[in-house]
Length: 146
Image 1 (cartoon, helix red, strand yellow):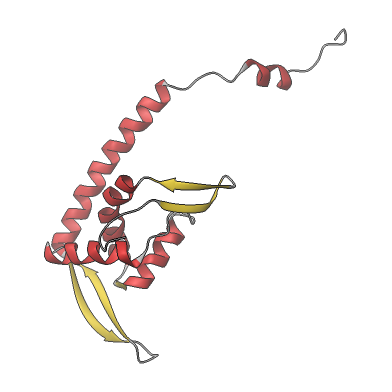
Image 2 (cartoon, one colour):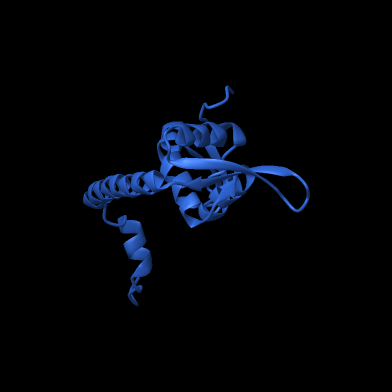
């Protein structure tokens, strides 16, 4: 896979089955997810990957080949700033922090995703089907004559 390309994100925890999240959805959601994580606190790459796994309940497992191009794009756009720090282990880490421009972008991303969510919930609600008759019969008490 080429750096900066998105692939399906796998989950081992979704209803006991593996789940794939479409690469377009992963790509579209990466900006607001990264900005929101950095709005919580400054962070570095590996910790961001862990946080995505944590907040998604294991449903999303990003790779560094997917994350770093997003961080670099956000840095070019002025939405995040980076700095190098030395960890207690002596290892250098590049920390990212959200800028005020990034905060504005995050608010806009949130507004747009809330509109998408409301639209999907509305259409899915209209598509709700009644429970199949077999389920209704199983839940009803049996009559004495049956």
